[in-house]
Image (cartoon, rainbow, N blue to C red):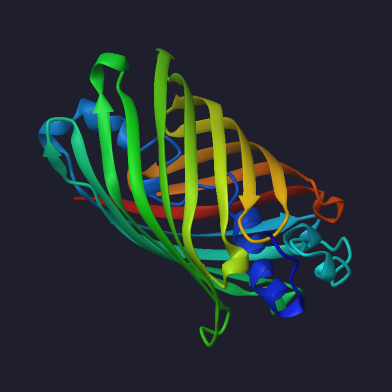
Length: 292
């Protein structure tokens, strides 16, 4: 039976909400790519570079920080509809070697830091580790199917206290279709199931779809995407439908240096009305990535 929960448990869920909202639609590394890294596998196997190291920094403005606060009715009144700037820094390493034919091992480890301008009591640090496999089905226009184990760990912004940790398993498929020079469309279906969460109140299963269009003309790139997600919380009586629309532009100064800017709109519809919200965000940043 699903249960209700109090303020202390709600604080842990609040931290989880920050990750879900601030990372929606964002690129988080090759193991969860926006269809830009692994798609090149079938085109350059002979000189495939399995190691990737990346890092970056960006700043985003959100007109409704309250949206990352509403996972518990007991927390609904903690913040009003306040806006704020969020500063994000991250770095990571990934290793994706070719095992045999079209099968790849897929591993990565990343560390991210989120800092709020006004509401610094919400600052947090986020660690993510993945271990899984990617298989490219060439007979289906290079359809990529994947399965991986994921561990997520979130601390307060001082590295002094654990807010939550979660083990999960996810699987899905994604494909990029190039229909003209410099133009492509992409799609992804993914399911993720929580295996174990601490505290258990933060456990949830998610089913998502991501589709989009990409235009490229070196050194510029523009991507328009839409993401639909359904989240079902294991221990509380709550399920959400989440919609994210994003427009992102990039300028590749070098092969390993990219400047980017994006605008997004997020709408969340929950069966608990206190969790309904809309958020607009806009931001810019720089990212570095090297392969070897």
